Length: 540
Image (tube, rainbow, N blue to C red; front, side, top):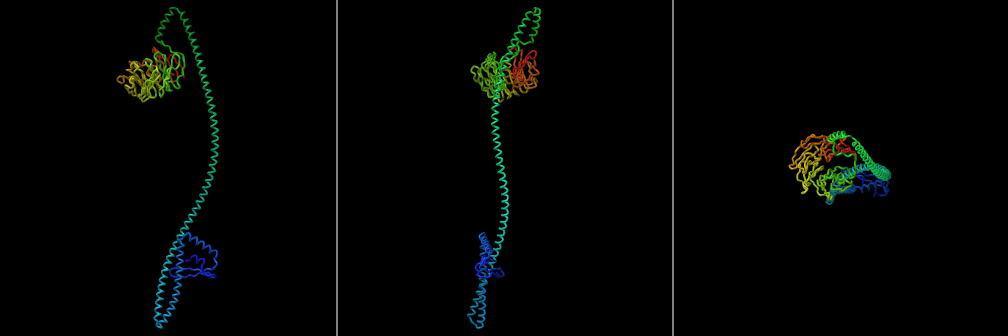
């Protein structure tokens, strides 16, 4: 075991030659060095390393200190043992002499010396044991140091790897930063281009708005010109009709009496097939009333007022003599689907897609009743002659009878199919007829709520109106309500039913029937001959 002072030769006398002295015993080997007064560089370096090691590992330094102290103590004890051995030899010689001389004092001194020697040997054995334990601890410390040095080497290698990876990541980060800077520049360029395009778009929108305004102005002028042209044509047609009538009257005045009698017989025969009401040939007046489609139209009893309902949620009353709007009735939340005047002309009723029936007073132009209870669109409703009851049909597959005096529903009839239209077979509505989505016609007794008769097979499509039962198969049929048999059918190759609320109407003498087609044309049939009398194409 070598400690720092022994390795560097500190504490030696000046001028001594460095030598190594080895002294062996059965338990431990001790090496001692004698150094010169001059310290070599390698010794300084070794001393510095040992000092660094001691500061880093205090337990190891303490173990070395203990071991060195044990070595010094062993050397001291050996020197003392050698001295005592010499003394013992001297004492033995003196003892021998004393024995030879027979001295008691010499014997006593020899016994004391042997006891001291035995005690020193025991102390030497204990010191050897301590030195052995210190050597074992030193070996364990050396192994621990080697383990930590290996761990340090591994961690150093890992640190080097991490440093290399960190350098690679830093390089990638620099590249990504540069790429992000380039993309920011590109984004700025795109933003500038987008701003320029936005400015151009605003300019284009302004140009488009100006063009639309110009187009609307041109459309208005065109409509005005068309109206003037139509009026001119109507005036020309009126003059032509007057001329034709004058020529016809002149020719008739020149015929002989025989010819007149023969013509009279022929006229009697023709009058039996020709209607007394003549269909119109041209539109007398065009009135723009609604902002959207017109779904229904109704005329009061004396023909002085027309009611129209449309998708703009309004029911508009128009004076037929002047063509001016008398009033615009509001209150519906959805499209108005049907309109109907009361018999006395004081009330106007409108049904709506908001599942309600609304009744206005024409004298005050205010809403008088709102009948709610249906859970589906209400497509049709009729006043009774007494004007105190209303019967309504809805797509919720019910017909409801309302009492206007009490303001609530008196009876609900379940119809098994959505009701598109209904009409009264008598003034008080005790019998009603309804047309349904399942293509069937049904007759009901409102007093009992029972089904009186169901007529199927009339149409191949849903029935949209029951004035004369028009349906979605583009065919109008006249049914005798007494026998429920089809009396006549009215059709045309270009006639098309467009909506499931399309209705038809009779002329005042029942000789003509009219219905609107999907293309905007009005078709008028002769009820006797089932032939088309006129096709009016004023609507678009």
